[in-house]
Image 1 (spheres, rainbow over the protein chains, first blue to last red):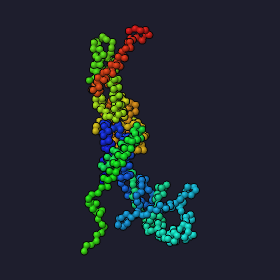
Image 2: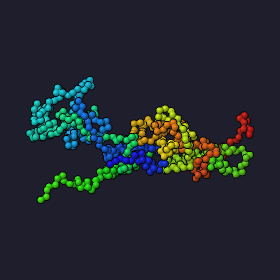
Image 3: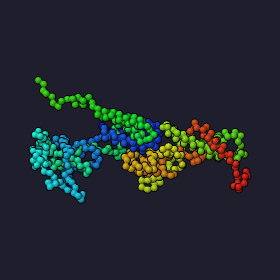
Image 4: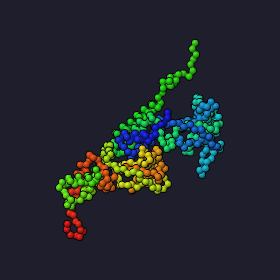
Length: 257
Length: 205
């Protein structure tokens, strides 16, 4: 799905539809259209970026600066397949700061001892895993997350890093994320399907801050943009007949006798 | 038609029996015709712009070819406007600026604050186009796509006073009567003032 239409062509299309013969409104329309483009990229047409990251000495991965949203994190196996590692919202940063703002490691002196996971009441019941409640097993028998996993990770949003669990043995990870779209050699390219939603989005964005336009009309314009965005989503994700057949096919078929 | 012809036509409507001995000056009428033309073009443009209507500019434009550029600093060039443009919506007084060598790609008009207001926006690059802004009597071009050897073709909606009396006088043909009518109204008010040949504090003709 190549993006082959320069955005300036869509801007000119917009100006022509408005009945303008010159480009006096070009900068303002272009700015609004870039805004609309971002909305489409984040929801519908954004391309995922696959990036290999090296583990730092702190056991962390540095988030790329163009990362808007992390989609997945994992490692590559010997078959070349991507294997996700588990996100653990409870995973705390392995590094913290002292009162002077200097980074210090969390060592055994300033963290709770981990229980072995088999009995949450060991070590006085503090710092242990809850594997049973009122005599009923609640799972989480093995490992921090309670099931087998190759590694776990958590976000440190303040510092823009990903913390990898200490039991992981990998030095390189693949991060899949949604990135800000890029201008290629100064030109922003869009997909053909995106032209109509961009025109609708530009119309709305140029109108939404104007006091001279009534609220009702602004809502109609916004609605038009959302409809166009939905139509774009349908177009971009439409499948061919063969693809649909393949999806409905079972992975293995039983032998017929 | 030039300004002189239109002025003569207007003058004839004031009084068909005007002769060369009258004290009425053709130059006064030319001034009134020029003002009338500017006023009508401006009123028409602003009214249509306010209502979101299409403005047809054909017939109001003057073209100046091969205007030279002067280097002001690194990546900043300017060209002096050969004529003062009318103040029109979206600064359309400067209707179009193209490079002499490539008339299919026109320069994008931006405001003088464009590069400060848009510097953190993706649109600052104008998607590869070159922009220009007006400052005083000059237009400034930012970017590396022009050099001192570049020549520009400018299309302007000029002020009437910058158009010579024998030059082509651009005005919408369907507005000729309106221009003459407004010019006569201004002219009649002007010539009611008695002509005073010497400034000696006495009423003498």
